[in-house]
Image 1 (spheres, rainbow, N blue to C red):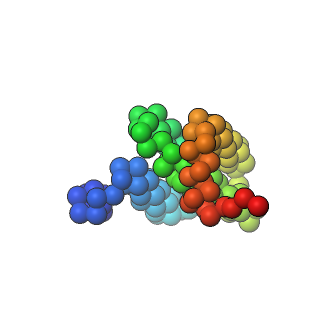
Image 2 (image 1 turned 90 degrees about the horizontal axis):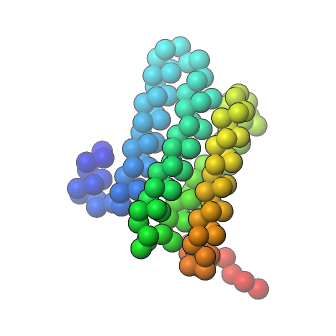
Length: 135
């Protein structure tokens, strides 16, 4: 799938890595299910993959300075994934709070850092992507 995305669909490298991380989580979840479903894949691996997604995002923003503002869309997606983690915690699907809180804090720090570093171009990108209008 990854090779198909890269060669035939000509996706951006960050999109390919994000999809690869998602497939890797599905594989970890499957391993947990086969081993008796002790829920470690949901308690530790899912927030861990969101933290890893933030690390990849920071690396791409650091190395791709020309297209820095385009990564705001991906950063908003990671923050929305953390909202999903909060919902899973509220439904008692995720039981360990420490890794969840760490994931949320890292995502918010990365989001606000990119918003500050990106400046006006990042704010314009958010208003353009999410159709936010000033009144």
